[in-house]
Length: 640
Image (tube, rainbow, N blue to C red):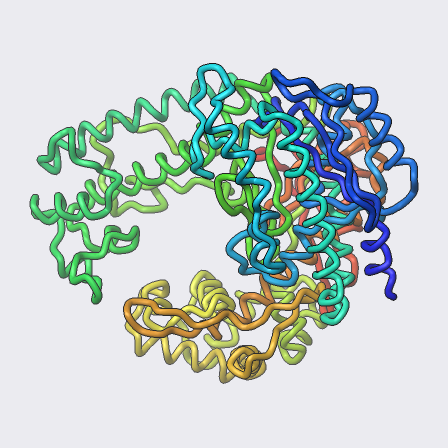
């Protein structure tokens, strides 16, 4: 028997039941009981906090049972370890205050299930057990039936809808222990069964190292979540109010300009397209027609190219950018900071996972977060008459610059923010797999700007109008598998010219073309592709799109590049956490960027440790990163 299987066979399985789960600072919730199962022995449910019921145990008994499980030295197994460990560890919130176990004692069925099927519809425990083990969730039905029938929560109408605001399952602490006990015991039984089902497949696919990486990153993620991020709350709140007022002003102006009433929805692409066509600011031909529906296209690119009134075009672009910035970042950040004394508490997902309100996380293994940090703009470009875009007319009235939201993120008091970005992480991963002329170019010149190198190379072959920005588009079109028509749109040239540029690129770098062809062929043959970190991705199955069966082999190269980049970022986070002394913790990770808060008098040493963690030789080409430090996330001063 292998070590992994032996550990899971022997593990103590633990599952808490609790009050409803809310966001921080009200997280983790107060537990009402816990099920504990030692290996194959029958589980036991300790209930001490069910509201309005006679509990068979008291808190002291439950705490003693948990302390015994912690002290026994056996592995600890959870389904969603991040939640159960937060309940157990974060004293005095839950009054348990147990120490965080070492990562190598912690096992979790969610990353096991993710590794085996990164495209699963759900990783929730009961649906997964029903799908994979054919175990129906009978105990859940009994709990939900009791809660809906008795409606025990004052002022709350409980429902059966899993995604409803008052889903009965979230209020399990109000159900009687004699009904919840079998439910929770069923959960630890399912957790163990899923782990034992998954382990042999993880071993067969040689993904133990990939699973261990997810276990090693867990304490880092939990620390980031518990710590939170300091934010300039007063300024954020004031700027949000100004931005929301500006949006109202813009809506009034747009309705007058378009000749539409207050009932029209400016955020509906179809309604906006109809209004633009009706007032003569666009035509179906200028917007483009969707082949399947015959209706005008309503995406951002269609509006940008199809509106013939430059000022109206610029106003809509500004409004769209401001609405995204406020809705995606400013408003959620301000809401959580208002509850938490000026801090943003973020839920970080290192794999795709499931919550009561749906799935979260990326199938590639990239980090995701709630509230969102993954797509925060690094800079804001002016949209109206200015040196950058002199062709656009002035706005209809004074409009403030778009907020640079990174500026709201602050270090701890007495600290500065230190951050580093991997330099061309995805391109270096591509070169690692290409392992030919591009890889050699990086080895010869570790600081190579590959976009400019390719532009210079193609210019020497006659493509004298090709600039770095277009080559950057070309590179990511290759990585993401963009079709030739879309590539032409992105490059701003006819399809024939885009095809000629792509052919010239492949002519200079045939190994890149061969790599794409090889990954596509692997998926067509039903074979897997594997990331740098050993994660296995089977072919994405074809499905009907616009009435025809479509394959997705072109995505295989992106899976490798994005997935490997995710592996590398996690390795760097783990490496930094291992060499940091705790005084300068990680607070953010955004794709290929790591951010820490460091004491003002020690930031140079912190930057050296961060550089060392990120620049380790992990690929067959050099991996570099660039650093910055400053008093906010937007005020970074570049440094080596």
